[in-house]
Image (spheres, rainbow, N blue to C red):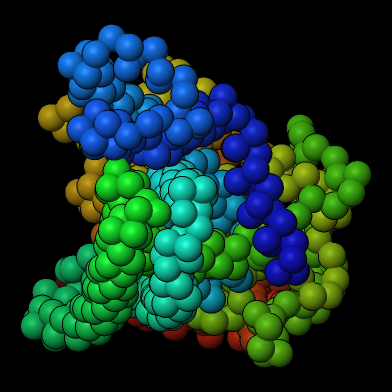
Length: 603
């Protein structure tokens, strides 16, 4: 499984890199140009010192400059000074090309990764989301992908430039004086050990930081979504203390990581100073002995100082690489999770359904061996209005989730229009089912967009017609911006009855043969109940409807009533039949009427 995840992760990255091959080539050109110009940077100084000021003879590898010496030393000095300016301009141009292209690659890579992760998370089954926290997913989509952007684009090419510069400088130093090159080489084990220690320590610290980030994001998401409850219980200080505790742990880990980075960077500086001092000492002795020119020593010193700068950069980059590895592991962990519910081979489109729903000996649990549904069997005929009643926890909402294939039954089968729902393509099946939930979920968008969520290609006239049918048009047009009013998060700027009518309009515009209504009247006042019930009657007309409710008084007009108790269908029939034949149903109904009477008297 992990191997498949890593393969999938690599496929996403490599697929993007193949598309961006032209940009990568330009970035590589910029990287190579920066490397070459950095290597050329100290040569004009060497030429001026050795062959202009000291008058030494040009070596064979610089014989192509012989023509310049014939024009006089002043011309040569002007030429070398001009070449220093040209080299600086080239470094600037190549650096600009490298930074611009790599930044664009990095941002496009973030877009690709976020799109892939977001799409994959939406495909995963509800059982996965029930086990995990939304804050953790948020940090993976936002923070982890951003970390990878730096490494796969900017840092990767920057590290390449530093490594090429490092290797190129070593090659030139060994070409000029291999003994002095060995002096510099002696510092490499110390540098390598420092970088390795920094990388290992930073990786462990980054993993702890990411975990803390996920906890903090989850805490923020949880508290912000329950602000009314927090304020009602006066728990602002309590939540602040919890948040401060979790944030302080993240702060401590961040400081620890910064300390590791500082130690590694300063170690490289000290090692670099030792290497530079050794080169100056040994090189000066070589100059005094006549085995080396002052220009060569200047060139060596410049290269040594420049060589340690890329190493310091690599020490800093190791922090990013360690974070990137942790981020890649976390993203791979998501990508390795396969959706539990997928289209079967040869699955067919669910289209033009009549709405017959059949449960055959269906059993289900949430993986804890505590059966939620046990051997449930019933048939709903096309166009029939069926009420599913029972106490809380009896399994009513679970049964509806199975029809939508949000979960899979462990035993038995569910058929719609004579076809096992496993044999339908998942998306096409869900397009044939409309839902209205107890807690109507609306988006922080306009009312028009919320209604059109049921059918994205709906026209303005169709949206208004759906709103009228849902008894929502009148209150919508009284709002300041009408259908273009932007709702608060989860629609909290509307009352419960108004939110429910928007949800009904969303189901009406979908115009599907099967409806699932899960406690659509819960929590509404008497006036809202009347308007919502009228809208529901219009919605259910001529459609197969499954109404999940505790309210036995409201289901008297249903064609069939199913009584669910402890995961089993214990009674079924019409309201009149059950009242006449079922003592259990009659007691539930009388109990409900008694509670309703108490509510009326209280008002």
